[in-house]
Length: 533
Image (cartoon, rainbow, N blue to C red; front, side):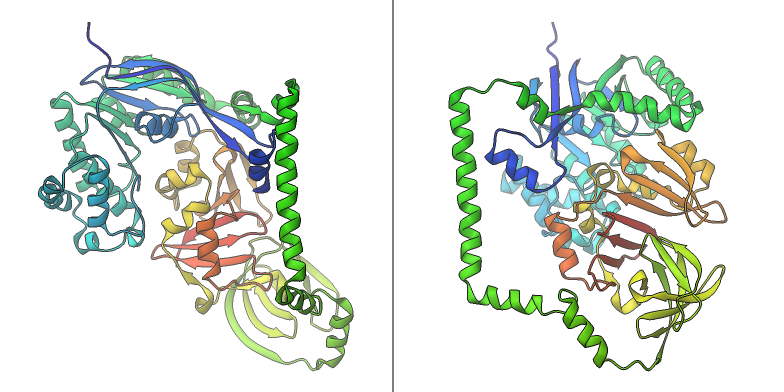
């Protein structure tokens, strides 16, 4: 009897979710867990044999990428057993590439990690370089690559290291048609050699074209696994049925399934009876934590430079109102207009528009993210013009889109602070920019809300993906808002520290790439992405 090439036995994989970064520390030093577990894969079992091509489908958040990482043995399951016979290679956008190394260095590093001898690496480097076809960029750091270039290099490395099992996770969603055809030819070549292939894609056509069997993942569970025709037909029927539901019905349906994927560790831990030994361990851990905290505070207090900086910060007008009032008395009250004539955007939830600098008479209100033209600055006010008229607003309520204050950045470097589901499939989401309202609604699944925002623009929300699309008057998607970005991500912090903030509170930053203009708002933990004009 033929032995399976890949075998999953009751495999479960969860991830810890924290409301605050400090909760991670508490999880380490105490037994009273602060996290929730999200079960991305739950009790999945299947067998795949040598030479089979397996298509994997499912809506966003179904667990496809987690399955890919388990197959590639990038992550370990929480429970269950994963048996892989042979070497597996994962092809995903930028998977396994080091941003600080050049293309050539990444090739060498990945090959060495796979146990390939140096003399063999020298022979296959020209083949990888030729297949990737990214020119002189092969000698540049990967952080300077576009997503398409990363995908080309990653695919080329993977297929030239002769893996037994190939896992393709949305890696063909970027790049031109010529490279796409080249990749398909290579995959078909692997099929003819009897290699095992897992192909993850949103494209039913691609899945149907070369899958021997299809796996349908649904909110972390294996819903169906069988013949392509039957599984894909059932999957299409589900998508059609789901899209016919009302927005509230869609939200209710998805909430029922997502609820099953969460487990509160705090409640679970509290429900258990703790032994006296465990209590002692907990008390020791808490004591150590308290000692560390008080030691740090003691050091800070006795450190003269720290005291001086503390006194200096207390004397700052923004901290000490009394000093602030004295400063106001010294300032000139003469109104001097400084010409600006730059585009701007509102960064406060609701911004009052006044008739003039000398009166507090409100003539209107502008919502968050409203576009306007900032004409002049007079003391602490901007004279502005907007769609419905002209007026005066407070300086802190808007930012000037001044090119000199916009930091140039590699888009992929920002992704470290973005939600994983967007970061892993960002090209898929960005491909829906400039599409019509109906096109986006038809292509993207599991919509959670459909509304009109405070600016009167249509919005499609995909809350479980942390993504929403805003549409202009021409009914085209003009911007993507990515919610719940991690403002404490080390990579994102490094970028922000090197960039000038465009507001006094240092909470709003604007970046540009060759293609996109990106506004990062730490007040809302979100980023707005749109095409550069």
